[in-house]
Structures are given as C-alpha cells and as structure tokens.
Amino acid sequence: TSLINQKKKMESDLSQLQTEVEEAVQECRNAEEKAKKAITD
Figure (cartoon, rainbow, N blue to C red):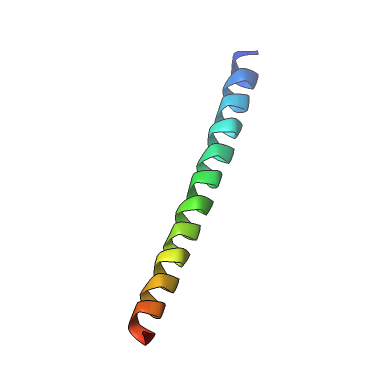
C-alpha cells in the first residue's frame, strides 16, 4: 500500500506541475503579445 500511496502522490504532484507549466506558458504568450503590440504601436 505504501507504493500505491506514493504513486498517487506522484501522480497528483505531476498533474499540479503540468498545470503550473501550462500557466507559465500562457503568461509567456501574453507577454509576447504585449511586446508585439508595443513594437507595432
């Protein structure tokens, strides 16, 4: 059962990290868009 619990924890940690990465990527895209707009203005 210890291994099963560890696996569950790892899976939940992994999904949390994936969410954080997605958010970081989105912020990056937003920053890029702002930069492009600033250049064209």
